[in-house]
Image (cartoon, rainbow, N blue to C red; front, side):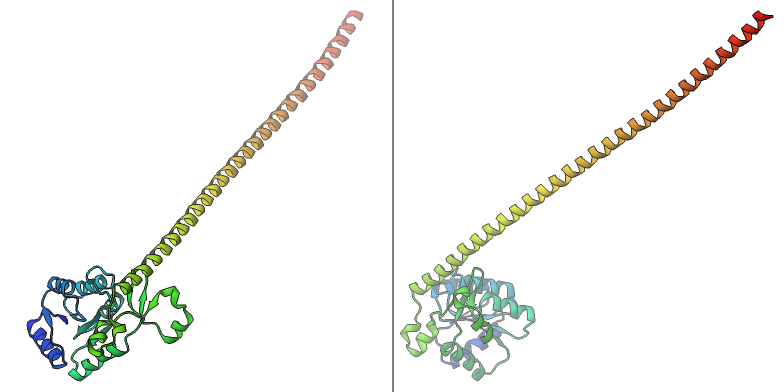
Length: 273
């Protein structure tokens, strides 16, 4: 067992409690780096982590273990302990992949019951691109979703193997490889989905560009139409002015002819006299 708690007195109390439950090989630490190194070097069967003082570091460590970045056995039983659990800290630790959260204080009997539950009735794991950990779906949701969609798998449980002798629960390299294979497949599917999404976005952008060009062409056509209308109107106005000038010229010519006729008549009268 690896135990992490920054408070020496609390760490000592928990250590004595674990010894009273039957655990013998217990490594306890007050800093997260030493805890990470012990998990990496000793490959423990169970890890107990205090959640109250270094929540982010603890959640990061759990996530690293589950994704095979720290421990050779990503399925090691991991429990978080908290005296003052908040909704945020509980959600963060569950999303990281812990098996259980113990709200302190708890009696030795209560802790023993929770550990026995993980020995005999541990949840199957869900494997996705971002999450490896216990399947926390409700029974109705679990029945409605095909297992192969979310990658549900019964993982090895060295704690069960050590306490019951059940060799089928022992961790093996094949199980780790199987988990990694599932993650790889999910990542490949995700990459394909992202490629399709990008192609759709690019197509959408191209369609928008075409629509914008059509709008600009339509606006240009409208401008040309308005210009033609303006020219036509100007031509009509010019024609009207020309017609008015022609009418005035005709009227002036008529008046000139009438004046000439009157002058001729006046001259004839003078000649006759």
